[in-house]
Amino acid sequence: MVSINDNFHCNGAYVAGDRTIKCWRYPRSHGSETFVQGVQNSCNPVFMAVAERLGADRFYDYMVKFGFTEKTGVDLNGEAVGIIHKKENIGPVELATMSFGQSFQITPLQLLRAASAVVNGGYLITPHFAVKTVDENGNTAKVFEYEKGEQVISEETSAIMRDILESVVSEGTGNKTYIPGYKIGGKTATSEKLPRRSGKYIASFMSFAPADEPQVMCLVLIDEPKGVYYGGTVAGPVMKELLSNILPYMGIERDAEGTEEIFTLMPDVNGMNLKDAEKILKQNGLDVQIRGQGETVYGQFPPADEKINAGTKAIIYIK
Image 1: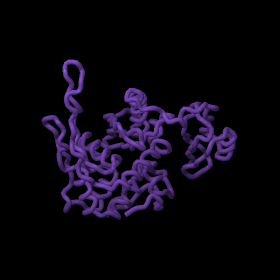
Image 2: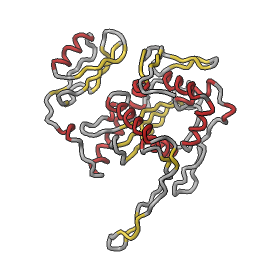
Image 3: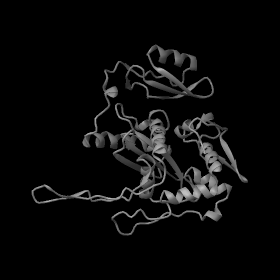
Image 4: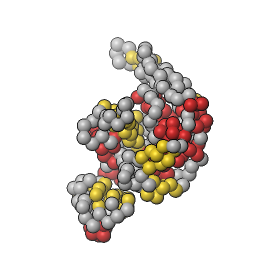
């Protein structure tokens, strides 16, 4: 239904049925963007357009395939199940809001299970706690084996999604989780709590690593953050701290590319004119990518004064 290079246009809002639903960036917009850039930007209109292509029936069928209407089967009592619209009640407005994660409720474990299927080759696993039993001398007595689970998307689609979600961290809204030398994939989320317009949110970030061969998946949820409430901004740094400890502990080494000799600091170009910012970055041997429209820089990645290697991609946001 969608190619990674399909073009979309965000004008700051999307009309679904009789409702105009705003992008998080409203009144500003993301403008013209590919599907990949839409995921990187966490752009609501892109997700709403894709859901419209799918249609309510197919969208609902995938909600079922990804396990949102059932318990995960984890080895714990008292597990809850998601609350989803009935298929016959999904109109244009419900479909649009469901496309970017609103108007239905799932548990964090259901989310992790579905996200795992997206990046593990497409298999909906049943989460378990037990890995093995050991005797009094520490020797392994038994290793537990579990079924692989039903395949809900193809290996090919899963590989594409790993690449896209890695780009969310390296280039998009998840950049505050970026750790040099590690390939990390992830997705930000910002959910509005009921009642609507209460000013209360849940900021979250889901990530997995290494992105090309996932071994660990994490979910950070921050309930009712104060001030800035976007998932990438609030939960991203927490995720970075977690993974900075988890990955070395698991014996996952940094890529050789990430351990090269560092040659410069990322210049601070915030507030600069676009041409001046481009000139400074290129003088420092950086590959420059521009996001947005306008002449003034209001954001950058990597952050100012961060140690970086030659050839690093520098992203500047303009308005």
